[in-house]
Image 1 (tube, rainbow, N blue to C red):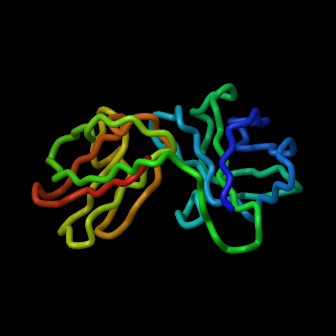
Image 2: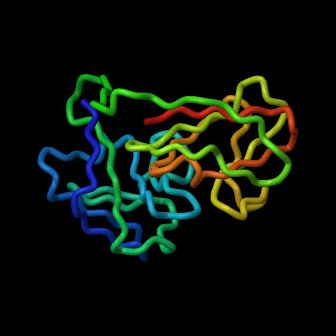
Length: 180
């Protein structure tokens, strides 16, 4: 079963070190994602698929992430999502409702529609898109946004969908989202 925690963890943003020794049965090899929901530029600081967002090292329950965490406060919540069993099955008990939708992107940054979220959202560039879509925070540009080529996706641990902005290279490209 996948577990998610925002229990007080020891976090040193200067070195990217997270100590999760207070979590029973925790094993860094089973981490799926680490989120810093209050980070304005990119709340996902570790995930299992994105280059540059892995671990530099692990020792016991201590992890050092590759992502530059120097812009995150040591007092910010850090959320770790991990599989606590060796079943290979990921399941999360979540709210009964699921939010999903799509927006046609503009050439300038626009906020996604306002919608409260409990567990965050996954944003995906439609596979049939002709160009790259950029996602990020208010003031987003193609130089500062996280690029999503057609078919690519990224999770965000935000409390409201409207915290995420998008822009595209084409006004016909579509950004998909789902979360709860």
